[in-house]
Length: 130
Image (cartoon, rainbow, N blue to C red):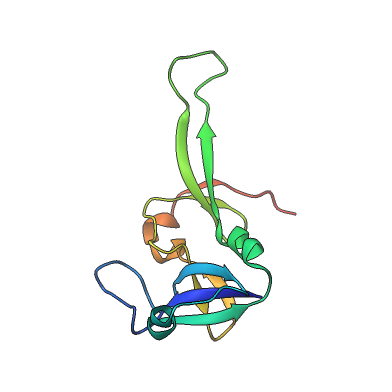
């Protein structure tokens, strides 16, 4: 079991765009939280080990667009993309402070990139239909 450290009503701040349920840390089941952490954050158990959960949170990928097949001193175009639920890669225009949140109703981890309209409009690479 992994342990998720979540923003709660007590740790929420409107100074940064963090919301209740945003994941601020993923820890092993053996991790001992401090009294302060237990008092101001929500801590939930999540199926799987911490390393596997961290991998599922990482939805960013760097994409390169080569200008040509010729050798050049100019670097290729580079963009950061995030993978949506369909597997398509969309440009990251605005980076959320926390890349994912925990939905207590469904027990699922949900990405935060789609909270920003500018992150859902530009698809850089579409996954081929199966």
